[in-house]
Length: 225
Image (cartoon, rainbow, N blue to C red; front, side, top):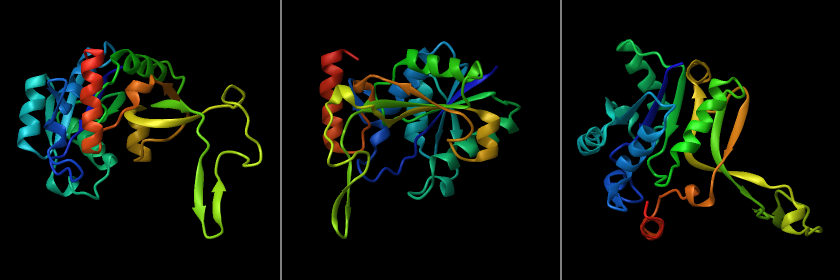
């Protein structure tokens, strides 16, 4: 089976300008994502889909192949699925037809290549059609309603200890491994049999704010990563 990774990275980040080329631990975010994918034994090739010349240059220097994303697919309202579907179409035009698609987000700076390999292995073996990264959580969740706060994932009158509660799982956004044909048909990242790749809490950091950049820099120094 052919396994390719696609990392969508547009240039027009609003929350943190030029986010994908800002450095964490001395490496641009996009380069860190490419590094993780290249270090995974199960991934055959790594592509970055971008509309931005600087991101393209940094990605190529890190060892990725670049897919030029049209401007109409790199707007604020454009979805990751738009970029992935375009990437598959571009690859097909070049005669590349992957069996497994690994969707990686550059905003997760601490992706473990071994976790990527394990997730690919599950899809390759037919154990799941999609495997996504997540961390367990025992948080009591609430929502606001016109009548006040309402419990979401628990009975507000029952407060069991953490060890007595079944965990829920929160997507980290770091990676999604999918059967490529199934994704092309569904046109969405979740379809068929869905599996969870439970990752370490540190791998769950997703950068969307300046404060999260500062936290990532601190963790990179502490972990030497």
